[in-house]
Structures are given as C-alpha cells and as structure tokens.
Length: 276
Image (tube, rainbow, N blue to C red; front, side, top):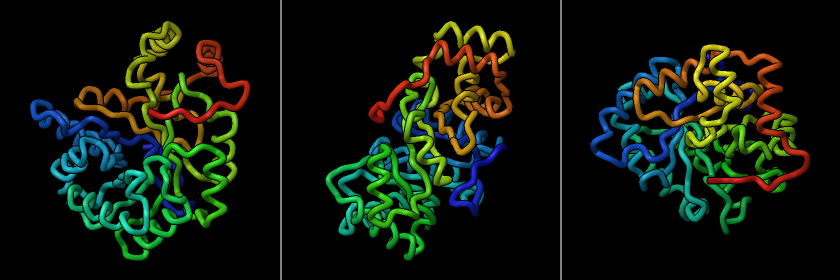
C-alpha cells in the first residue's frame, strides 16, 4: 500500500475506508462488516468515521467489525462543531471512544467550522492529546483563510485537512492544496467519486476501457495522483472494496490526465471550498 507522511514522522495508507451512512440498516450490517474487514486485510487500515454518521452508528459498526484488530488500524473520527469547545470536546471524544471500543483515536478532527473559536478548539484538542485520548488532531472543511487563522491561534500541530475533492470539485487546486503542500500537511479527500455521480462521464469510461479499469478506479487514481492526498471512499460490499483497492496500483498517463483536464477543467481562479 502506498503511504502518505503525517507530521513527518508517521505514514498512513494513501487509500482508506470511509463509513458515511454505514451501520444504519440492519439488512446491510453483515455485508458492511465483511467489507471493512477485507479492506483491512488489503492494507486499507485507515478508517474514517464521525460522531455525526448515524449519530454514532458508524462508530459502533467499526467497533464491532474491527475491535479484534484495533492495533492494526489508524482510526479517524470527527466531532460536531458545537462539541468542539473546551467544555464539551472531552465528553464527545469519550462517547466516540466508547462506541469504537478503543482507548484512543489516532486522528480526531473538527468536522466543520462552527461558532466555537478556533483557538478554543485547538486548546481542547491539545488537552485530549496530553490525556492520551487522541494521538493527532486536525480539521475538516476548512478553507485557506480558515487555515491561516488556525495557524495564527496556535494550530501548527494540525495534522490534516479533510475536504471534498474529486474531479468535479477541483476548486481546492487553486490555493488550498498549494497552501497545504507548502506546509507538508496532507489532504484527506472525501467523496472522491462524488458518491458515484461522476461515473457516467464518457471520458472516464473511455479511459477505463483503454487501460482495463473501471471508471471508479480511474476517478480514484486521479484523486490520489498528487503526493500528500489520502482518499477515503466508502464501500459497503467486498466487491466494491476490492475495486477500490486496485485503484492504488493504477497509473494514469499524461494523455489520460490531459483528457480528464479537458473533461473536468481545473479552476482558473479561486473558488470557495465546497462541502457535503
């Protein structure tokens, strides 16, 4: 598995597993558990979740599916913005730990920016680190100006910015991705295939057919083409997990990338960061 450096001293898989909308339907539970376990066996040991996902249902699913292999995992969870205060973050973290069935979260993120000052969130995250409840902390859905403010209030320990990034959401390439790259701060790309909506694109199909891949694999490989990008697609079946895993080894040619640029033009100016 290709890896991405985190804070310069740790490496995590460039392809992880997302869990949005998992754990919410009993008829899918066994298939989702099997998918998570097979993904780990294939090296996709970074597991992303959030207290928001099914109001904890996804975290509980992860605990049930992967509790026995906890030490092989890099667990990522996210706190609601209203819980990201010094008064509430510790309790939110404890609830996530309980649902996950673990004593620490490897990477704990602010899910999106709310009314709590960023400086207060930074201090609350550092307190959780000191207590051994989390190993690293980071943010999600913060744009360049937010990141500048974060660093100004003591957030230089931020490990990652998790953002919406895929072929149809290329706005971050103008200023946010260069800003993060200059500081060796990885990007975690959620919805890297736009929840399947971009897969009907004719260019994706043409490239996939030419190189013996699927459109989803091409889209995933494109997302991971940049160093420092971690993709976290969701897969609820073993077949889907295996399809995703194969994208890590897919090499896109310069012609392929040029065709994708023509079909999905890069930004010509700054665009506000989008989120789902």
